[in-house]
Image 1 (cartoon, rainbow, N blue to C red):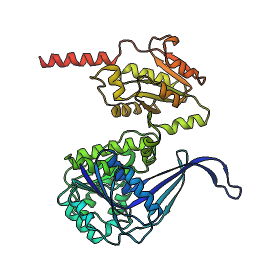
Image 2: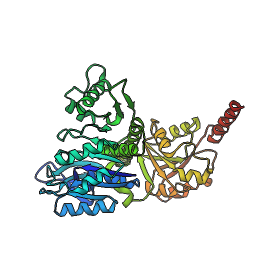
Image 3: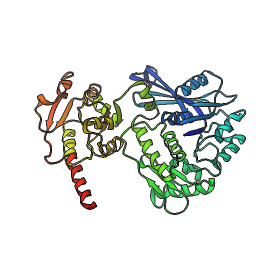
Image 4: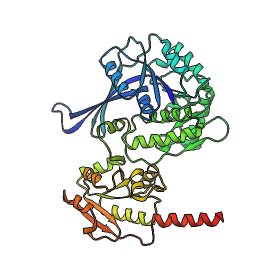
Length: 461
């Protein structure tokens, strides 16, 4: 599928290091820079996300004739994004985050706008020849260009168009299939209070209805952060999609992830409600895996993948606490699993679940398993109060994952002697302790599946 992304392009840079002292002349931390992560930002991040999913992506955006612009061109090419550059007299915009580990200390914004000086015919052709359009407005001036807006208006009449707005940006063109303001943008752009009678959801519904009429869009979806999203078509009750529980994580780029997923889904024929459901799920996973910075991680650090909750693990380590880990497939979570997880958590200050990926489960259990996908298994596990983080691994055993995690305690459920637990030798390498916890007899996923099949056979007969 082909998607054309239009909007404001930024060069995002993360300066990452550690802080162990403060300035002698001011109460400010001194960051020892250890690494720099650079990636396309703004509309560029949305384009890179879509391209990483296998979409054919064209990005229409202004880019300066400077070193930051050249770096962006290289990065976009690395991600497989075709760039139709809009000439500009401005310098390329940059956003620089200074981070100590997972904590941002300060953000530097370089350049405020980068409006195009002209719109080449290739930009109009890209809008005419695609299957979906995504507009990412970062108030840089691209979406305010009259000729480009005319082309976007024409595209909205023929293709699904998703518009991610900005408080200081241009209004969406008429006929947008979906507009996706966040809750603060919805309040500012509608002029309506975020709460009031009925609470946050009622307030968001009023704002969405007002913006729907104001923009003459087909649908408006207000994203509510950890509370999910609210979608309205203007008639009937709003459609609310809750978000999965995410502990910690980096929200940078979550709006781009949401809008990109929605545009991709609409381009393949999904209903707007289904596209929003997919977008909420994708945004939650995106935040849990480190946000925009985490998006670069697979290019630098292969699996295992930290699915969520790593801030709590690092906090426990920094305070000298005990990190406990356990592992398994956890397909069709049952009482035996829950008992094991709560017992394991009681042994320390945080619990990390090492979870087999779908591919790993199939190798171990056969092609009929897992019954529940890894994304849903992650969501169910993180919903338990006793689980602080999930670590996905694709091997047959968690040995490699444990080497990276180095927990203080590894908890195994079942009737084992320690000599029969292969992970015990791994834990011994750094002085970790392996323990065996009692398991509730008679509870197993295999038994549950067999019982469900028997019930299905009886109903069929």
